[in-house]
Amino acid sequence: MLLNYSIDGSGIPLVLLHGYPFDHTLWKEVVPLLSKEAAIIAPDLQPDNRYLDSIAGFSINDLAANVIETISHIGYKRAIYIGHSMGGYVALEIARHHPENVLGLGLAASHIYGDSERKKVQRKNTMEIIREKGVSEALKSMPAALTGNANVQRYCLEKIQSINTDYAIAALKAMADRKPATDVWLNVDCPRCIIAGGSDQIVSISLCQKMASVEKNIHLYVIDSSGHMPMLENPQMTASSINNFLEKNFPIKR
Image (cartoon, rainbow, N blue to C red; front, top):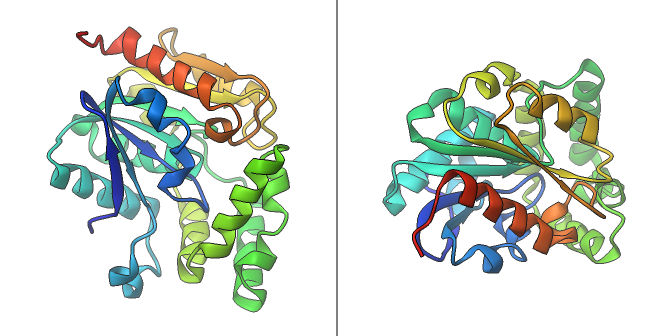
């Protein structure tokens, strides 16, 4: 399934995958700061209206397959993938099933572990509230949990109000059902990085440090004054971290 996407700049292909419940505009503040460093592709993981009938029942692996198909359609076989939150789970599935397509792998406010039983129950309960009362009611507390920045909270609320209901439910189920990716993270043969929000209440610094410690060449970037939304809370530092990762591992001729 081909996804809608934005593409900016030229150079090595860098695919930025958004989290839930957002779209490619999540990266809007970072992209202009990276345009001279790479060909930046930001897909929308939610299919457009042409594919609404096929939304129910998809998996994280299905989203990964859609991304691979879209990147191939654009004309790239291999790319660097950096995913935020759910987008990180998608990036890990790409590395699991299509390692030959992955030049580099990054997780932004994301992790390699499966859901705990408590988290699975929480997602199930949220799905039920969406069915009964709608997405806005079910996710009304999410913006404050993601960030303390009022402007970013308004962006989160806007995206919550615009998300397709069936996709909102299916994505929650897909995240609950996903496989842990600890083996993928350890064994993938490419440069890796972690971008962590210094005040992230969802993916803690200690968890990111644990993921970074499995090998000495995994880059850990901590974004100060940021929660779960570093690309909007501190886009300059987030872009600087990505550029540093590119420069260290994929030298660009200038």
